[in-house]
Image (cartoon, rainbow, N blue to C red; front, side, top):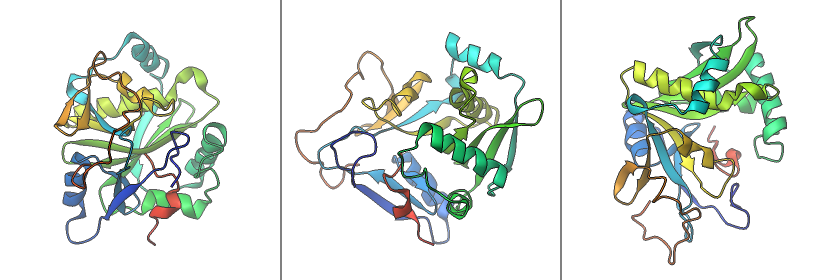
Length: 254
């Protein structure tokens, strides 16, 4: 498929279905290998001439916020975060629709109807939750769709009220997941793929310490040494090397 993040490139994904007797165990194993969940499958990029998509995870217990991140937390200190079951609601869907129209109007998710949104939220064979964020008046400000892994929280998708720019709600939702993961005794928050050349995906290394997965395993991101952006390969990967799909409908199996 055409790459949704880097213009002029093609995306190739490999996937596995989370079925059988132990989907949670399979999910944990594959998440550690850089896979991401969508509905009842997990996928990872396997492009022939590009390795720009780098799996990243935050070390929650070692995280130290920057001055800017502390300001974001302070601006949102009155928000209440609640865990609710992974069930689609009209309230959440209306905010999801506003978010897509404002931030991703040209994306493949912008035209999702309620049934399609419900499938994204509810079609999960693993432990999944919604974290919703409301202000003091009870008004919904943001939602995070999140999986519980053995060693961390995996942020599947988050959305928020697009008009509240000063709150920096996208950053705040990640900060809350870091705090939540550490308080649960978990080690990591999995953020999906970092793509240095993509403005939509490059923000993920701002939460430090952050680890990235390469051929040697998970290692701590080095801002000085990990500055290469597109990471174009001279040759295709061998078959044993290892954000989201360009067309999310390709991953529906219902």
